[in-house]
Length: 421
RNA sequence: GGCCCCAUCGUCUAGUGGCCUAGGACGGCGGGUUUUCAUCCCGCAAACUCGGGUUCGAUUCCCGAUGGGGUCACCA
Image 1 (cartoon, chains in turn orange, brown):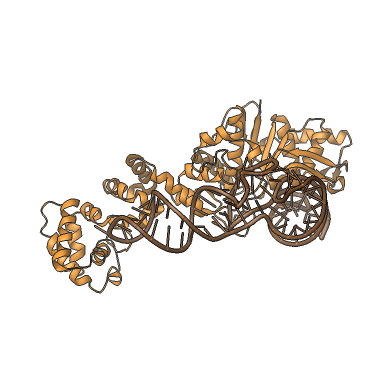
Image 2 (cartoon, rainbow, N blue to C red):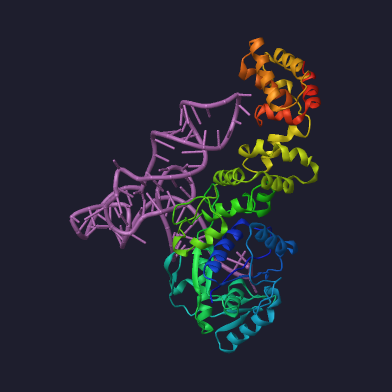
């Protein structure tokens, strides 16, 4: 049985890199009918943040990635929090100590490096080798009694019967130490697959301080989890048929480690925007309304939101754009005058005269009437509609103007125009 | 700096010795549709880092250089 895991440490918010690694692990497990474990590596007492663990699980859940075994689910290999496995590490360290493969050093326990060359066949990168001299004696139990990363990881991967370690390439240099530990315990190591790490504009590893790494901000900005997953899947991996838009299940069905690239991709938000826009464009009215409802919360007139759905669908790439594009449906725009053209007064005056007399307030009547106004006054069509657009919305970019006027209703429209003439 | 890894359009990538006058996508630019913006449609520009080999033939294989990344903790 194939068993994989991710091993996030709860030291901050839910990191996009964790999601990326999780996605590959998840797909690999699903594809091979294996099990996906989420193990919490909380052995750093100083950096541990209580809420972080919850954020990680929430982030994964939002993305649609679930797990078979972890702290909150049943599993035969628990506990799944390293801080609850201290006795095990202690026991294993003592074993190494008694076999003279480790020694005490200033309150810590150090592993004796055998100093032989380490080679493994990485499932993504191919053959990787490290000269034995590179690995020095390293600490396995800190003086505070907690295990170090390399020790805890190895013990747990052994105990939890992990068969494939799929992780970011920043761990390549840790692998020789872990391999030495496997050897010391006489256990066959799992397969290793080191995927490239996501890079920022400077081609550096994504940084917590400077880059948008928190999964939560994508939700806040109104991105769909499906689009984010799709985008992540396209980074460092490609669909065998060259497809660009596909869901999680299709990713799983087509996933293989062989198609993972060796070099690190730049996390380019422009493509995410496009993808997200595609997902929005392909939603049904009720689906998009549902999503907007969730995103906008109670502060908006939902009846109005529902009516604007068909008007905004092709115009927004994420839900936060809805607010800037369609905000004028919910509150009166400000600083409208500055945008108006030089003939605005005449345009608006004529429009007002017509609109206030409209009996049947609908798109067709309004459109037809306004075209007549343009014709009789010999207005320039584009300029006329632009002034009208600005008058009702306060902006130059909006959903279709006649539809917008119809939606807002006579009172609001005539009121907004009147103020400007 | 030592060690490890990597190297195709600006970006994400396809490509595993001839099908490549290097394909797709995002972005850019130009045009069409359009009462704004967008959507949609059409088109254009844009890359195999360099130098040696191997081979009848290299983007593809080997070596080197250069460049980039990662890592060198009692962090994970």
